[in-house]
Amino acid sequence: AGGNYRQTSIGANVNAFGDIYTLTFDVSTENVGTGSWTAKFLVDGATVATSTPVVLAGVNAWSSHSFEWTADTLGALGIQFDFELTSAAPQNLFLDNVGLSYEPVPEPSTVALSIVGLSGMLLARRKRKE
Image 1 (tube, rainbow, N blue to C red):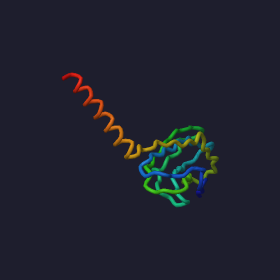
Image 2: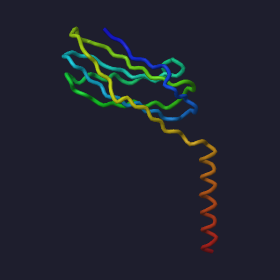
Image 3: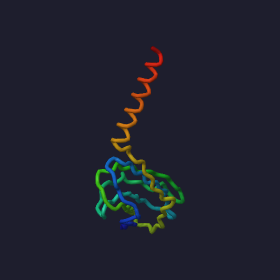
Image 4: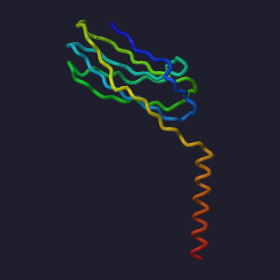
């Protein structure tokens, strides 16, 4: 048996290639049994990246995980958690402390402007020494 929790849009858009998105979450199970969770990043409802399966650690054993994706597709950002139960025992699965952060990649013009600024400072320093 299996299932999923899917939120196809989280009110955010992927606007730049190269931005780094990090999804963090905790998982646990209440009853004896085995299974796993898989996290996915979605853009416009389509899967763009899938984590390696997170194997449940045991009864009431919480484990923390993170999953990173570097943007290579633009559009509405979403997340999905799939779970797969590999034992017949009924389980209560828990997902908690879900967080999403991103680190924007500097614009090429920002990097170029920084290089020009540093070059100017080095030239001014060199002239002052002469």
